[in-house]
Image 1 (cartoon, rainbow, N blue to C red):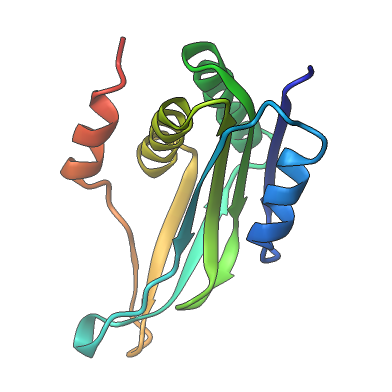
Image 2 (image 1 turned 180 degrees about the vertical axis):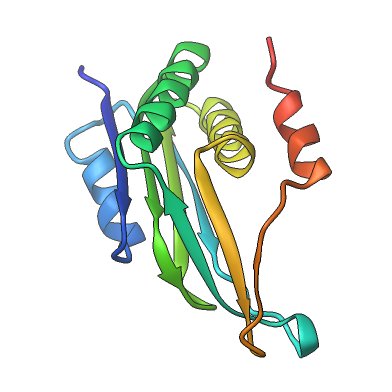
Length: 155
């Protein structure tokens, strides 16, 4: 059976249930689908986020995500995967990213999803700026704990 791989970068929101249905349609070898949905958080007080703006280089970003999707498929026995990442302005409560991994067994699906999320969080070619309620805008820096999480997957 051919493995279904979907990678999309889009400004529009996505429907998680529709994406799971598309990933699993007609495939009776799937025993587990793991999903991760990253959502824009707002917070409270002076540090509350009014919006995130996500930027990327079209073409380059898709190619880099595809490269890591191929690595996930070579490391774990997956039957399919989906990565959807939004760009543009996103407000609190809106979806930012979706990672779906499908496999015959849950362990592979969980590990592949974690691997892909750690990559997306640390190395995917996206740039985020945070807009605060007071209209201050700052670029989001990499975080050490995200780098440490991604380091565990190095061969």
